[in-house]
Structures are given as structure tokens and as C-alpha cells.
Length: 195
Length: 195
DNA sequence: GTCTATACGACGATAGAC
DNA sequence: GTCTATCGTCGTATAGAC
Image (cartoon, rainbow over all chains, first blue to last red; front, side, top):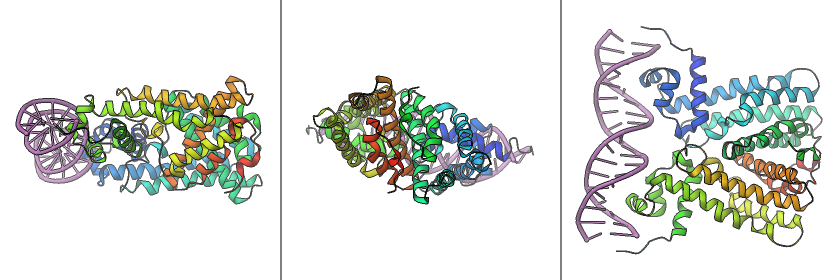
């Protein structure tokens, strides 16, 4: 009776990597087994609901843990600009400068009926809310703050799509560079600066 | 010996719809057969390379036909602002105001080795080039024009991802509204106007 | 050119030994 | 809790009649 070979936390992280890079439909139990070092039946022991449950828990962890940790700098003290720049660095590391995709994108196809859809929507909401709080702290009215938050996230998500298709990671770098200006409403034509 | 039940053009359009909404991995030959009204073996008669060839031709049509037609208003005469607004209306119809996904996004996972990757990259390049020509016509230097084009497309792609995850289509509407300002470099804080 | 029928591997999922 | 072995289904792809 060997004890758990990998911790629950490690397990979910490894599952996350697979879903993130292959998407829901592109992820097979064989892939998940290989990535975790467990056999398929062992995965079923921990996730009786099978692939759908794994996807759901991966999505829930995205909302509960990743988003909170990644966005924690927003709740710290210091100038708003500096907090946002810090989040930009965290996001650049998380997405490997545009080389990795976002779970919100890749896992949002083919998951109908798995229960993961709600978890993905919740994770997106947490992200939007966190960005909107910063925008509101700069004086924007709630609706404006929310719009800025959504636009900032859309710029990042779109840059990740472009990066995956074209291999060009500069759009991602620009989206991160523009993050403070977009959220704080200090946008000017620097948006088109070269890089 | 019944003649072709559907024309080559219709056939590719129907295949496109399936790949667009289900992604490459989520698309099965059974789905494609149902969407076209043909049996699987009939699809193989027209596409001996199977699913991979279908995906490749769908991606090639995206670059050759869809992009050219959709972006045709950019090459017309009249004020740049008006041309871009026209393209915004075409894109809004094409994406059904954010309800439909983009092939560049959904087909860019799981296609490794199908030859569709190059076709997708080419389609993206055509789109970027068309937007960049308009930006350049407004006086922007080549590198700046290209950056504006990429950023405009990223805003749209990201909004489509957000729309799929959250169901909120307002980010897409804003991305289209901002399209002229982004491409022409007349961006101001109207980017955060409510809607 | 389209069809019915089928091969055969990969898939998600389960049974039962240890 | 993990494993080996296996189930039934659906996946892509093919053969051959009409």
C-alpha cells in the first residue's frame, strides 16, 4: 500500500499543464497518466468523475489559487502603477512571455457538461474583479473600471492567441507594457510605440 | 453516379463551421459528415488526406477568401475612418457580435503535423498586413503600423475568448468600436467609455 | 461520386489483485 | 493507493458495391 506518490497539489499542477497546452479535447487520460506518473486507474481513484472532474478541479484551482496568488501584488501597498507593473512581471513569467497559452482559452472548448465551464467563468470573473478594483482605486467609476479590466485581459488573451499562431511574442510584451496605462486610464499614443 | 451533392465551395464552408466551433481535436469525421450531408467515405474521396487535409484546406480558404473578402473595404476609396468602420461591421457580422469563435484560435491547437499550422499563420499574416496598410496610410511608420495592426487583432481575439468564457459580448463591441482609433493612432481615453 | 460495411487502434472508464 | 488487465465505444481510415 504505497502512499501517495505525488501530493494533491502537485497532481493538480501537472494536470493543469496538460490541459493548458492541449486543451480539453486534446487531453487524453494517457497524457494525464504520463504527466503525473500515475496509471489511469489511479487517477480514477482520486478523481472518480474521470476526465470531467479533473478538468473541473483544474479550473477551480485556477480561480482559487492561481488568480489569487498572481494578482496578490494588486492588494499590496505602494503606488498603483508599481503594483500593476509587478503583476505584469508575474504574468510574463506565468505565460512565459507568450509561449504558453491560457487555460481560459484552451479549456473553454469541448468542456460542455463537465462542470468546468462554471469554474472557468468564475476564474475569469475573479481576474476581472481584481483588475477592476485597481482601476476603481485610480478614480474610475465602477462600469468604467470593469470595462478597463476586461479590455486589459482581452489584450493579453488575444496576444497569446496571436503568439500561438504566428510565433511573434511582441504583441504579448506590448500588452503587458500597456497594462498600467490601460487600467489607470492614462492611455496615450504610447500604445503604438515600437518594440 | 450522382453528381456532387454540394459544391466544393459549400463543402468547405460547412467544414469550416464545424472546425470553428469545435476546434480541431473536438471535430470528428462523424460531425463533419453530418454537417455536410455526406458519408465519411465520401469525404475521403474529396479529401484523401482525411481530417488533416480538411483542416488544411479550411485554413487555406480562411486566408485566401475570407480574409480578402472581409477586408476588401480597406482597399476601397473614401476616408480611412469610414473604411475601417465598414470592416468593423463586417467583423461584427462574421463573429456574430462575439457569439462565434475565431478559427485562428480554435484551430490552432492539436493541428501539429497536419500542415494547417502554416495556413493559419499565413491567414493571420494577411490580416495583419491588411490592417497595417491602413495604419501606414494614416502616416505611421511601418513598424508602428504593424504593431497597431497586431494590437487591434489581439483586442478582437481576446474579446472573443472572454465572450466564450463569460458570455459577456460587450468587450467585443468595444474592440470593434475602438478599431478606427487603434489603427489610425487617434486613441484617447474614449477607450474606456462605458457600454 | 456516393454509398454500406468494416478494420483496427485509441479513447474513457471499470474490475479486481496486491 | 497503486497496479495490471480488460471492457465497450468511438475515433480515423479503408474496401468494395453501385
